Length: 625
Image 1 (cartoon, rainbow, N blue to C red):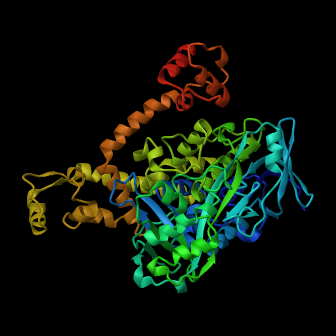
Image 2 (cartoon, one colour):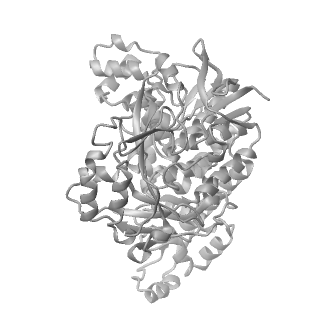
Image 3 (tube, helix red, strand yellow):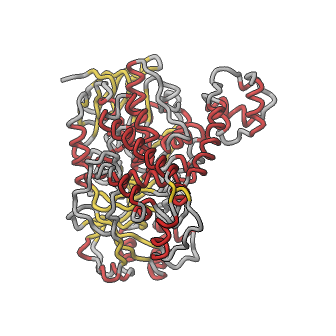
């Protein structure tokens, strides 16, 4: 029995699994501690991955060599590209997953990863001596030694669940809470607080009248999460369904508000504003007479359905009575009611951009313990923490992603610079350079970095280079090929398009919104030949990437120029160079925040709430810049 490791990861949720796999695959002997080996990467709430901005994070994880995209594709029962009516910066992949298969696929990944070991137990204390991590102690009385520890405990730290006036300890339904670590870290000076999240009722599909619901099928095109062409959806695809609440439903819920933990004082912690409970929707939007709900499958063959949009902590009787006034759910049978859960988190401004804590060396935090919510945000943090824990162990350089490199970079910079006042959820609007952070080119942005780390495989790197060459070949061909009027006008007129007054470059035609590369290839034989020469299993992906690059080239180039200017501030090192208490030319608020956060660079300082442009100018002057 091995008791000493390079890296120990506490918690086998989405952050913990990515962290452990990354550290182990890069060469660190890694131990993953979990309370239940049968619920590794459990999808505690919605059995779905991706969505607005979250889908981009998953593609970035995959591009770097992480596992979430692969696991999701192999367990997917519906895939959709959201926001297709908008520009490509907003396109966001999302998949419904088979909850059980998702766990099985992750377990298969972990079991096949060299250097990665599992231990089923509860961590009760982190061994810290002289300000540095030494290992972990568990409830079974085992003491493991480690050079680095990553805490990814999710909602389990002092977790408390609420259903009406009933309170139950636990990190998830039927799973115990974890005690001891919060108290220990607070005694060392860590700042902790409480947050709340919730999950909806689960219903029996056989009790739903689908003739009174609106069917929503998934996409059937080439899109999927992983950039590896061999990873495909193999499970039976299932539809989701849309239903709506109504005034009768609202009245029942409003009458039950006195028994809602959110409104009777039972819950005091911070909840997510962007994903409110159904009772919060009624209070926040009193004039709305209906709210949209989604009935989503939990698996390929199960009858269990997830009622997205109906998160609630109200008494189970109120939840059932309200649901029965929705026409499609008049005879609904539920498997379990929705519930709210409160849990401990740590102020993320206590971390560096590597996700190492400032107070304790070689201790890293990732996931909901940092005040975030969502599987994708957790997995992205876990990957970065796992990489940096390994790098710290071997004495390597830090791995940090910039805001113009990845949504993961935006996420971590927001956390460590601004902190959180509610559970953090990624949106495209949080990324000022989102035209550069599209889901279609995450491999072009990040695979080389993952390959140099030893995380992305040789095969993945080779595929990225091949794609880049193919996209460039299409661009070069389009810039050089002149389209003649006699060649194209008959084809245009037959399809109702205005004929060309004179010949022009193919590139200029592709810029027009009504034309696509695929459409024009029907009329331009050399373009068709070029497309058919591309690898068959990646042809559509490559053509889409080339088309986006051409159509949005002006926006992309302008955004890159802006990003380059901003990056100059991030190259100006600040940490340890100034005594903020002595700088009287800036405000008291600015001095206090600069001292507390201790930013690494001028760029990070400029993003701290309360730091004004004039404060930044004074800092630059004091640095002699």
